[in-house]
Image 1 (cartoon, rainbow, N blue to C red):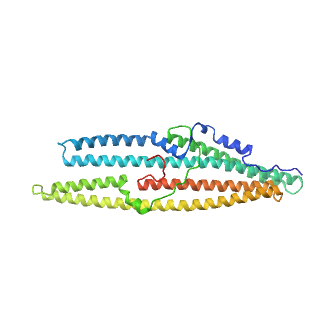
Image 2 (image 1 turned 60 degrees about the horizontal axis):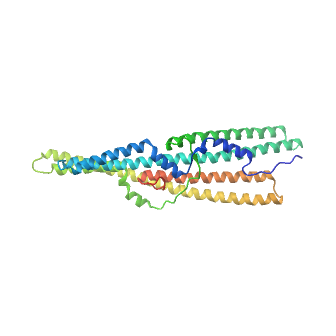
Length: 348
């Protein structure tokens, strides 16, 4: 009976598929941190927000130093500067989140190519097994055809995975301004070292809350300026109504922001739990592979059996990679909800 060659990690087929998927990616190898930094330095939204802040800050400095500027104009200039600062922070957080998503998508796509290539390799072996069995009368022509159909489907899945790498590369390249980039390392999963209570205490930095707070401060000043003997009572009444409306709006915005933050915090907590599960399953798959490698050497299992174990290990590693990426994406989403960077990426 013809003998089948042993399964080997990263066979020529697998290496060829991975190389094909990464054609053009070797120009710029990026970590998640360097990708975020590149995006922050090149993204139009961040540049626009920075320019707006520079302008608002200059206007505010001029207003505060000009003795002829009235108090309402000074408050307006100060509020505009604080809002511009919040908008710049928001722009950075949004770009960071988009880049994290693009990076994890690309890295996972690259890893999926390896999974699908290994699946193709296993299915090719299955075709060989079916053919050998048919030669000795232990399988039918239909068995061989079914194996070939399965191989054809896995080859298509590999081609699709390779296409996804190109799409993900284009997205990351656009965000970073680098054109051609490769996700060179697995995205990290930094610890969440703060509490929901502490994050809620810092919500005033959000753009929506800054804007609503500015409206309240301006309404309060209007009431103060109208609360005297020479301003019509109706004007003061209208100013107080406007102040009450502004305060209700601020309370509503704060409540919505708090709810969004709580939801994002819970999602981040869930992602850590799922990562723990994925890591446990990967460890079990690694142990099984190590045991089966030893069993192959002792002759108690076949090379085909080991190849199946190898594929299971690769899938477990890929699942852990996805769970790790989900943690980083959840932290990026939490950062946007909290108004502060909790990922440690980008240096801000």
